[in-house]
Amino acid sequence: MRILISAVVMSLAMPAIADQPAATGATAPAKVAKPKKICREDPARTGSHMGGGRICKTAEQWRELDQADADTSTVMGGGPAASSTKQAD
Image (cartoon, rainbow, N blue to C red):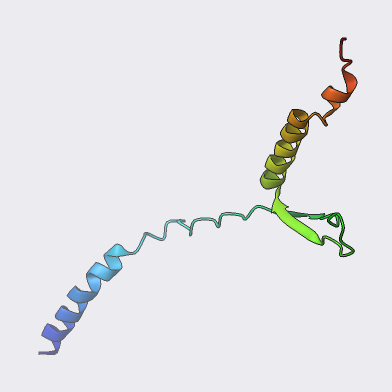
């Protein structure tokens, strides 16, 4: 009777053992590194006595924001290209 119970217990445990990965140097996948945050000082808003504080974003987010600001200033005429050109009469 004990042999029968042992055989049943072993047969139930075998699928659980078979599902485990082989221990042949397989390690857990490496964690994905979070992008490093870069903080910049936020200037005080016009008409306010309170400082703006700090804004923290990733390098990619700052790059996109800086590019958008450069595009806006060029379109609005505040960029270096608009100030260095002479208008013909």
